[in-house]
Each structure stands twice: as C-alpha cells, then as structure tokens.
Image (cartoon, rainbow, N blue to C red; front, side, top):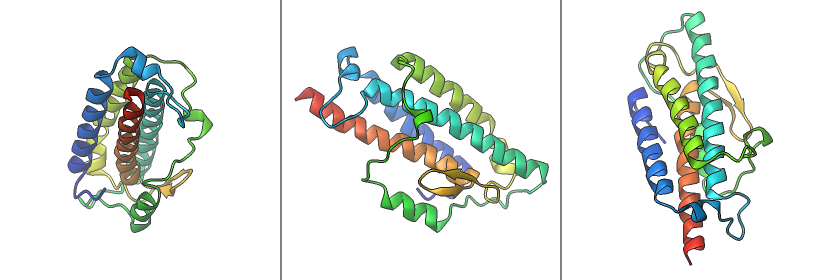
Length: 179
C-alpha cells in the first residue's frame, strides 16, 4: 500500500484489476450467480459493487485534483499517503465492512456490464494521471465512511485496495461454491 509515485500506484491498480477480471471471467454463469452460505452478495453483485465504488472514487479524485489545479498547488513529485490511512488499512484488512447503501449492487448488472462500467471509470482515471503528476494530490480531502478524510492519493490507493479485498473475497467464495 506504499507507493513511491503516481505511476506505481496506477500500475498496481491495473495489475489488481487484471487479476480480478481474469479470475471472475474464468467462472461459469452459475458460479457468479450462486450465493454461498455466510455471504450477502453473489460474485456478480460484488463486481457490480466494485464498479459503482470505482466510479465514485474517480469522481472524487477528479474533484480533489481540480481543487488543487484551481489553487495552482503543484505536486512535489512525491506520492504521499498518511500513516493513519495505512494504519486504518491494516486494522480493517480482515474485517468485513458494511458498504454504504449507495454502492449496494441493486441494479442486477451482468458481469459484462459491470466490467464495461469499470473499464469506463478506469479510462477516466487514466485521463487524471497527468493531473496527479502535476498537481498536489495530498492537501484537499474528501471523507470516506471508514477511513475519514482522504486525499486524492489515498483515494487512488484505496481504489486498488478495495478491488484486492474483493478479489480475495471472491476467491474464498469460489472455494465454497466449488465444494
């Protein structure tokens, strides 16, 4: 979760997303629609949730970076996340968190539709890379329900961490489904 540059964070997020897609697309329709015991959502619903969250994260990053651009706050070139962000990430690594209702998977989107939405968000995120490199992504903040006020850098890291968290969950779920 510690990155030295914007490019490193983007590359890590891209790698996680590739693993998520590769993993989920290897499952059958029945597997992605099965609700294992002890779970609230199917794999298909988790992918929809991830697409909804990423869409919001990209909008938040764009807003925070626009504030830095308007104030002409230039980047120092460092990629900075706070110690409290890292500590909170460690605290919740194995804790099941309740997603806010506005990112619950209620639309019944197909896997393909959810990945298309995720791809669109990632294209928008890619268009922000230059702003991340040019402007200060650390000063302006936006609140997260569990982590508190986060900077654009932290939201970018959280995006990949969120996908990794759900990838782990999906892998655990498929074990239950397959047995």
